Image (cartoon, rainbow, N blue to C red):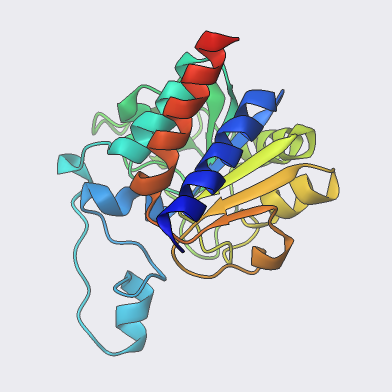
Length: 234
């Protein structure tokens, strides 16, 4: 894509965010690659390397810091434009950036949190083996492994916001891991505009109203900056 075309698409995304009454953002591992964390299905992703028989990088979540993509989403919150954030990531970078806990569903859990297996109460992991302070149930890592069920409240909240969205923005997800990847489909079926920022292909590329194959840092921060200017001028 030529630069002028990218600029036009960024302007379109900014205008759509300005017009949106219920903007929902959906993030995958791709948003955290600029923080030094590998993704899964990218050219050098964990699953891509495994399929090629290559060694994979270990992930040190504790030293990773939010990058410009995370901070752009935080700016949407500050501008009162973020209705809800759905994330497939467990790296804690959204909360570390300053996203309000009530505005995010971390569908696959969070490496820094424990969840009650009975009532789904969530708390910080201080290393204590205490029972759930709400119902007395067993507290365990909130990270969802393959074959485990997703947290029901987060799942219900995500579907609810997806169906209410008038703009659904996918950032750094291949949209192949379900049921999380069903969220943008639910938004599309409810009539939302769908914008996708992801360097790899996704199953919903043909259905997207706006598509970016460029890096997230090239797209989202300037789009949010343009949105901010529109809001200040209105």
